[in-house]
Image 1: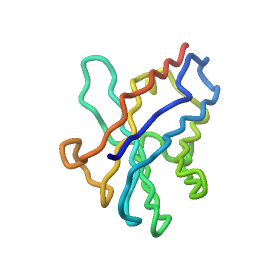
Image 2: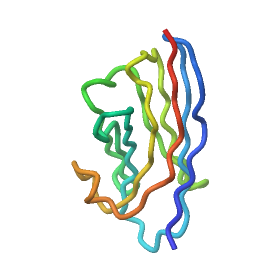
Image 3: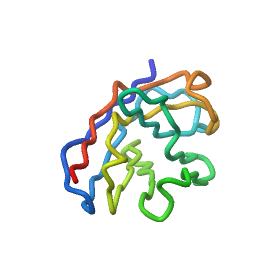
Image 4: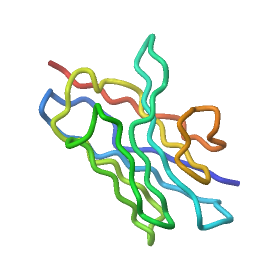
Length: 122
């Protein structure tokens, strides 16, 4: 059974950095994508970033381009999201999700972690 386990959330001041990790297990195929979504209170869940295990191609939302980077450690089956120059508007619960490609919508992804809280103070 596919399991996604997140870590690395916390409280940080504006301008600071955090690294989120998504540990994956149970995938029975190599061609999959790990995506990061975030959801702030009262807001819809939005896609932040994706990385393809097979091709290494990446996606970033306009709101985080130039500030966030994503990488995959194939040996550890872990995806990392490095978040720099954090802003208060980055405050949200961050989720990792997995499926075949980097879909646009939440409901297209079959596998989800439980989320980790990121809070950026001003």
